[in-house]
Structure formats: C-alpha cells, structure tokens
Amino acid sequence: MDKMLWIGMSGAKENMNAVSLRANNLANANTTGFKADLQQARSMQAFGEGLPTRVFAMTESPGQNFAAGALQTTGRNLDVAIQGQGWIAVQDENGNERYTRNGSLEIGPDGMLKNDRGQPVMGDAGPIFIPMPIDNLTIGANGNISIRPQGAPEDAMELVDRIKLVNPPNGNIKKTNDGLFELKDGQQALADANVKLSIGALEGSNVNAVEEMTQMIALQRQYEMNVKMMKTADENAQRAESLMRIS
Image 1 (spheres, helix red, strand yellow):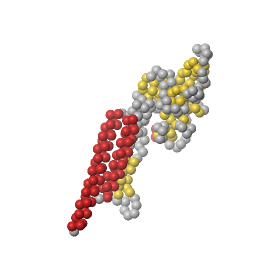
Image 2: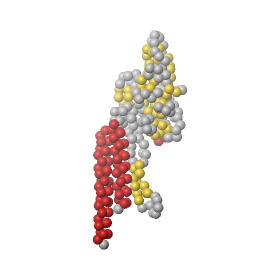
Image 3: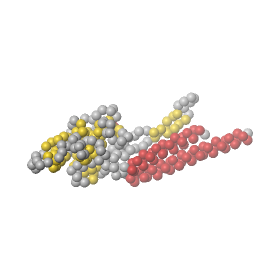
Image 4: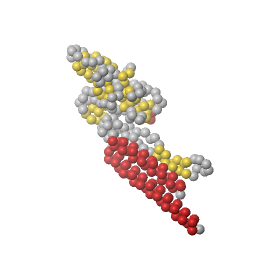
C-alpha cells in the first residue's frame, strides 16, 4: 500500500507547486515585460536499500514562455519596448548585470536612468547617468540616449550614452528570484547592435489569463484525485489489517 501512498503524496505535492506557479503568473498578468513561468514534473525512481520499487513525482525546470507580449502604445519618450528578440541590461540590488524586457524608464533625482522597479539601466560602461538639468531627452531605436542641456539651443543635442541591448539564446538564460534573467554560465552577455527598440511603447505580459485559469482548475482536480488515492490506500491498509486479525 505504501507504493500508492508514495505516488499520491508526491503527486499532490507537485500539483500544489504547479498551482502556486500558475497563481504567480496570473498575479503578473499586467506586469510590464513579464514572461510566464512553465511547470513540469516527471516520475523518478526512489533508490535506497533493496530494489528500486518506489516511484515519486519530481519537479523539472522547463523554464519560461519567451513569446513576446502585446505592445502597448504610451507616447511617453522614456517608455521603450524591444522589437522581436532581445533584452535590456539592468543592474540588480547586488550590483550584478541582469536582463529584462521592462522598458518603463525614469530618471532619478541623482540623474540615474532606471526602470520603474528602481533597477539601474546599464550602458556601455556601467549604469547610465543623465547630466541634469535638461530640457529634452530622446532615445533612439538603437538605444542611443541624447539630451539637450537646459538653456541650450534647440539643435544642441548631445549623445550621453547607449542602453545596453543584448540577445543571448533563450536556452542560455534563466530567471532569477527577483524576476530578472541571467546567463546560465554566470557571464555577461555581449551587446547586440541588431536589437532595436520601439519608442513610446511598452511590452505587456505574455500571460494568457484564460489559459492560466484553465490550468489551475485542472491541477486542482488532479490534486483531489491524488488525495483520494491516499485515502483509498489507507482504507485498503485498514482492511488488510482486519483480514490478518481474522486469520
């Protein structure tokens, strides 16, 4: 009976993990540049003393759905979205270079260019700082940032820096706990001049709310089935014990 209990218990655990993942996807259905997480589990033999006769469900790491989200036009000159494949380089709270599709940018009081999560945007030589005060700022499709200093003539635009845009293969990157992405080998991706930006637009989340709800309902039903399996195993064990007492 313990075989059935082991399968039901591990299966229910993975169902709950998957429900949590899908719930997180739903919570980020309106998060700029969010990439939906995927869940997967497979059967695995439990090795120990004796023969490997026990099987349990084990979590796999299939990654994320890298499909592009819908572009939302904002008309704001500090809103940028990646055209097609690519990432914007930012700095995490530990000072490490990470990658995101969130292009909702703003300028801090110290002139630092960052996204709406407070993560500094990386340029050719580190975080980008805008010399203040300015009358105008424009971002080009190639990531070039130009400014017109306060009081300067209309045509006195100066190139300040360039947003670091990268395009590593999707199979070489993974999501970190803060929702950013990094290379699996821990290295920094090289800037890619072929990555282009759409100015005055943001990329929405690629989460399909209807699909996520459907998956959650299916997972909850699977969870209930695994719980019933555990109850059945317990009932069978009690009946077997009763038979042994009779004999």
